[in-house]
Image 1 (cartoon, rainbow, N blue to C red):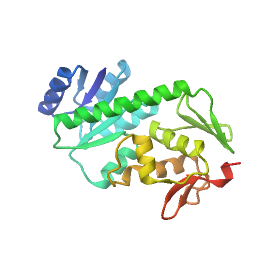
Image 2: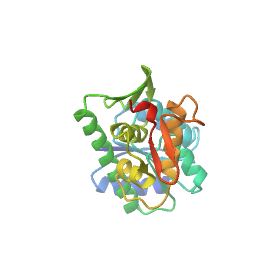
Image 3: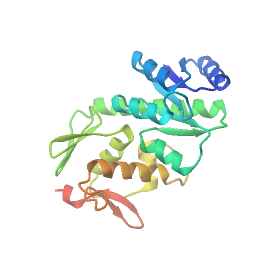
Image 4: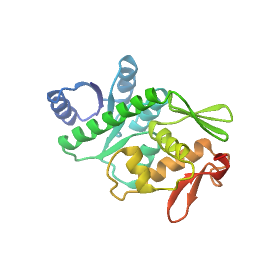
Length: 232
């Protein structure tokens, strides 16, 4: 599997590249945002490791550009560890966030987990040829999109999985822990940030009025469910 490593610190880049290659990955290194975008669209990658503080084009710009065309797993590597930075990165479509300084074994574990999830999503898309329709909404497993009144709305892989969870079980109320465990396929450590960000992004994409949602309803004190209007 091939990884695109976008990191302007030559020492960190070299260390990660060498370690990942000993683990059987092929690694292409880019040291600035412009080079990173060029390399990404010239080849096929299983995953992207992305530093936020890079020259020419920022990491956030690169993330946006990649997400416009691809659902490849993206792990952010950053010395910025504030909740706002994490929320912004996850909100723009990153799949994971690793704070510097980090151990190479931790990065490897995150890489394997995200590639495994991506593979599972692809397999699920192959198995589920039929869309699921609830009222005005229909999800299409083949391209991670949702149709609202016949108009296509592009979703990230995790946004799609959250929406699929709600639409497959329209009467069920999901806690944030259940959503995280089902979508991220990982143990819930009490950090609600990832779920909150993705719910907010979903509402901005599919609701007529995100401040008064009717598709993704908050059940106070419990979690979220599909709006009753779409159960019919």
